[in-house]
Amino acid sequence: MTNESPAHLNAFKIAATYIGTIVGAGFASGQEVLQFFSAFGLLGIWGIVLATSLFFVFGYMILVIGRALSASAYVEVVRFSNGRFFGSLIDLIITIFLFGALAAMIAGAGAISVEQFGLSSWWGTILMALLALFTVIRGIKGVINAISYVVPVLLISVLLISLYGIYRSPVTVEDIERTANLVGAAPNWFIAALNYASFNLVIAVAILAPMGPNATKKSTLFWGALLGALGLGLGVLAIYFSVLSNILVVAVVEVPMIYIASLISPFIQLLFAVVLFSAVYSTAVSNLYGFVSRMTFIDQKFRISLIVGTTIAAFIVSQVGFSTLVTYLYPAVGYGGFIFFAGLLYVWVFKREALRAAGKSG
Image (cartoon, rainbow, N blue to C red):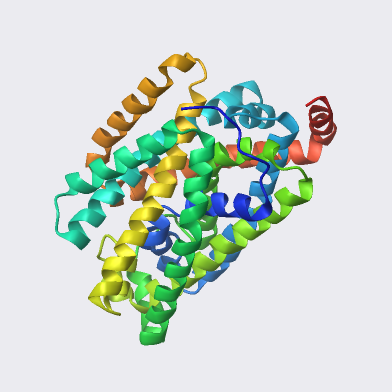
């Protein structure tokens, strides 16, 4: 793995990478949207609005702070915003979650392999582990390029299939009433939205922080964060309605969006399975890169060994199962991420001068 910086980034590439970092197995499969939004009925819409706003505000903050600090890894942003004690705690949470989320992505690839191709989960998990490994060995350039190519195809596919699902089976009063029997990932829509934004930003900071210094203008960061957040919000909203309109069936399947794709035709189902696999890949790559880039205490000559060892360990943990990891790991980390939110807000409000000084000295 190399630490070579990418060329100066434009707003589209920042937005695409931001979206691609988040839209992994949980998002594109519909599993996250089901548990964090659709399970709360119409109130889930307010949750989507809140989560989208948080994606923009905090995503922009991370990019700007990363730019001011000339950050090469997320730990610099975390320590600056949260101080020594809480910064170390958040650093630990993020590091553990990056590894856990990598395992979840590998497990998600296994679930796709079983449900869509009738193959053993080993085929999907092994292939995903190898793809992520070889991409991350290429360094940050390879990571950003790989993610930015996947995102447009992914978003278009998700939107088209979601729109078809809504058209074929519009949301009814009965669908909304059925959500009363579902158990969401949090006690209510407000906490669920905060939690959703939190754990996703915990993942995204690993890529956003080192991207900040590679934008020539601050306005590029603003538009990159805004377009990224709106893209995420639009995707979540489309999946939300699509899942809600088919709530009886999708509530009991591992990959809701593939079921909805199957309603169109077997070919579209197969095609979306490939697209979903690509989404899993984009997040697996960002998680593996973020985790390995944090291991700054390991000599550069051992980086490839670290990448290989991390991938093997995540592969072993992935055998726990995809939905289990989404249900328990993500919300737990989301609550821990609230501390990170508080630190970013504190820096933004009370340490603006220190932030400007850091930017001038950089």
